[in-house]
Length: 82
Image (tube, rainbow, N blue to C red):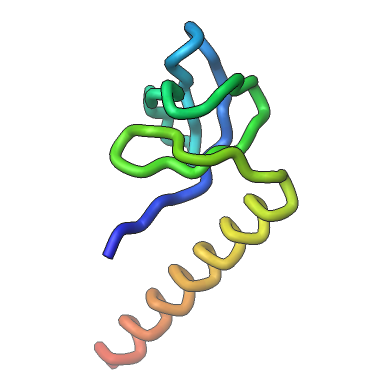
C-alpha cells in the first residue's frame, strides 16, 4: 500500500523543483511529472515527486482528516496504557 500526502508549495526554485511544507516541515520535491506548479498550490507527493495538483478545498479537507486520525490514534494509545 502506498500513501501520498497533500502538501502546500511554498517555493519554486526552478521549473522542476518545489519546496513544500507540512506542519512546519519543509522538503524539496520534484515537479517534473506536472505542468506548471506555483507557490500556494497543493500537490499530492509520493516518494519525493508531485503526482497531482489538488484544489484547496480538497487538500484542506484531507489534511483535516489526517489530523483527526492522528488525534484519535493518540487517544487510543493513551487509553490502552491506562
